Length: 304
Image (cartoon, rainbow, N blue to C red; front, side):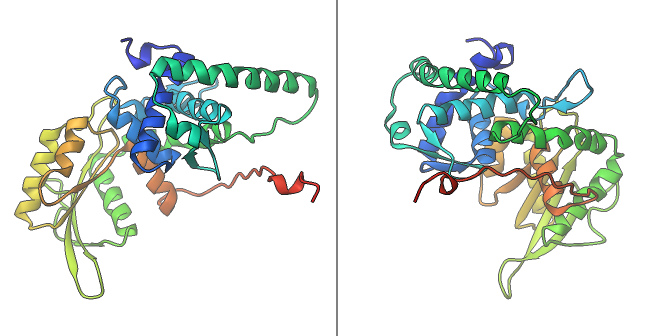
């Protein structure tokens, strides 16, 4: 089988349709597009493990994730074909047609394109007739890619931090996540005992748990492997940590993900893409600029 990154964009879309359907069946028929995307990448061995941080630069200098285009348009095609529906932005749900599909990858994409391609053609023709009109960003795949524009520069900024400053940044992020950071453990660049931060979190009204933090400012092309997870778990043992948080600007190999879930203490993995989303969520050293678009519901079109 051709490596995913060597496929054409349309072949990538076609390839992704079946894994999207299968994963939604696995999780009960509904998921956020973000979680669905991560799950598909984790399960599909033909997709590179670091594809969620494989940025490219456009002619105008903008960094973008090619994978997002293939994934978002695969979702849109499945919606057009009646396999999925989108009750609201960021959520996709299997329809009865999607739940009942049990055919091959090729048969699925052929059936989907038979329905969706004429619809895309109609949209193209419609746009050609709208001369001198403002282009509306009202398709989720367009909006999603539009909103991704900030991620490339932010990732570059993180990669340009010194190792010590990146560790400081990660401790600040974890503090935003309600962990009380210890000022004496894991704050030194040398002799830190294998952790880059340490803290305490209340798990209920009276119980407090110890949290160990590991921060790896790695090139996105170099994924964190399972031996790194094992080393971190050893450091957790040293400090008797109940929880571990492993943060990287890169990604984790599939073996690393499995290793993080082994044993009695699961380690939370935060890869580069998730890290950027958390920075935006907690507005850590970034300023939010809001761009909003709305699509009218059927309420405004129904007569009664």
